[in-house]
Length: 265
Ligand code: ADP
Ligand code: MG
Image (cartoon, rainbow, N blue to C red; front, side, top):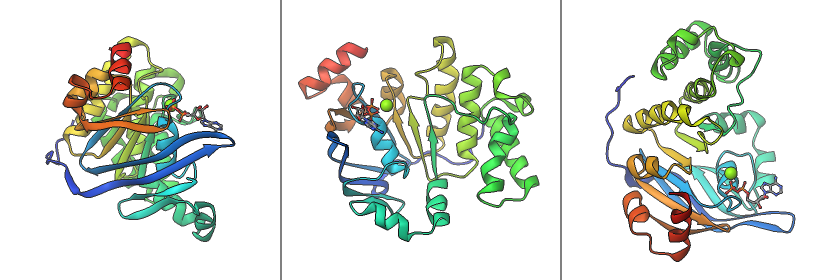
């Protein structure tokens, strides 16, 4: 694993992701009630909370997969969503939306690798197809990313021949291949057999140690306490409590945070 970049203290005056008063409904279901959150460059922020509280929706709004009803989101100073998002995106060229989305890495609970492509091809698909990288360069980078996630020997393997943990590590390498400014993880270990969780968390720990800005939705409270700088507890579409990982987990201030943590730990 590489250590090309030292971990610096996150700089709060330089948020990579800024979420400001975001509201989102699906039909009559209000899912986000004015959520605000800043994530600084190099910060690892874990988002915890009960099922249905809006965590995935929040990540999907950051990644252009959902449009917000009100509020605004910036990623690296570029607007991602705001109330008039639909019109806004129509005005941007598809290519521009694709370009902005490409710099936001997303890893889902289900690995969703392309089943008909090898590990290497999964990783090079977007660099070649979207970013227009020369094949040779994309493949070299893919091999070094496979090495970084401990899968140098699996370049030619198809997803069906990989374990869940290996597939998730390829999915992380695939996201990294686009040189993302921020990585979003949506319960990346929830679908894994327990004995495979550790190898995926290990790769995430390595990314964090190398300065990657990360937002991680997770139920792995021990990981959050150890790796995250900050934790936000979300319930019913609100961020109920947000603070340093250690303080929030060890001395939660709100009753709802306390009862959630008592249930999951
Ligand atoms: P979490 O990730 O915290 O479990 P979600 O963001 O997935 O929560 O969901 C929050 C709420 O929004 C849930 O009530 C869910 O049913 C609803 N929801 C999410 N996506 C959609 C959708 N595309 N259409 C309708 N309702 C949705
Ligand atoms: Mg979810």
